Length: 257
Ligand code: MN3
Image 1 (tube, rainbow, N blue to C red):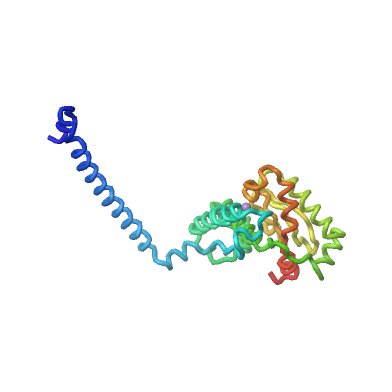
Image 2 (cartoon, rainbow, N blue to C red; image 1 turned 180 degrees about the vertical axis):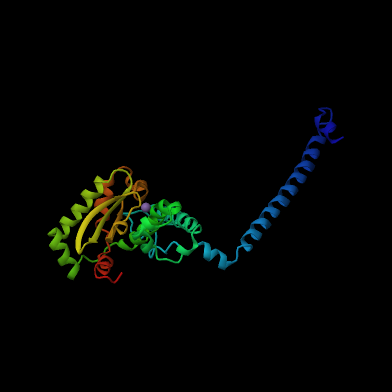
């Protein structure tokens, strides 16, 4: 009956009524489906108690420690937000996924795993390297940045002068090295065999993986600067060497961090 009225041009006035009825049913059923889906979602989250979630997530994204816009105008808030909330969070999620296959490794400090990559289980070695490295590197990176922080002083400055003559020549070396990284990677100020060195690494590799201690890490992946600087990595590097939290680097240098 309904179909006949709706299809019959002789009864145009009935068409809206029919449509309204069928629309109402469709909407009601749609709402019912939505409610069921929401219930399923709620049930899903309840079926993972907090303790189980913690066991599955031994590593967490650390707080940035300052506002997304704290480094404006040199590093824009949008870049910081995506970089921290999306990129860093993805490394942590994938690291936790990998560790779920070897729960006994979940409690170990990340640095300990990265410094002995070769002895880690073959099936997660690559994930540890890429995602574990990504987590460690970004955790360090956020702490290395500060707008208007003090210049290096004391023992750190002396060590910089011993190895690089001046802070400026260290900054120039960081920039030059960062420009030489082909593709994605990092430039580091690291303590290697009691010597301060500037070095680079591809991808998410860290000096930790070859027995050195990174004091300062600068992310030269495009995701660190592309929104604001596009392809101008040199401009990004020139800006970021003026955003170094030298107090934090000094604490690393002194073994306090
Ligand atoms: Mn990054």
